[in-house]
Length: 62
Image 1 (cartoon, rainbow, N blue to C red):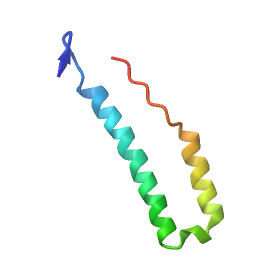
Image 2 (spheres, rainbow, N blue to C red; image 1 turned 45 degrees about the vertical axis):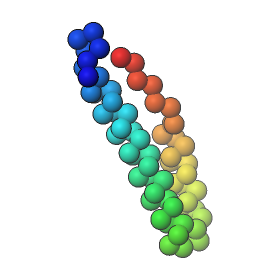
Image 3 (cartoon, helix red, strand yellow; image 1 turned 120 degrees about the vertical axis):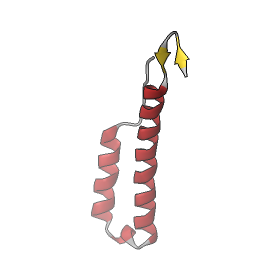
């Protein structure tokens, strides 16, 4: 798709990549919880802090 001669594929692909990364991380943490990873509280805290440090906002300007 183009808007004013500018392709919108790159921003769309960047947004999808960011979303996929976030979903992969969440799925991994849920998997750890279901497999007894909750007993490793230090690891879970470190993972949560690492995710928090990534930021959650995605701003794409076209």
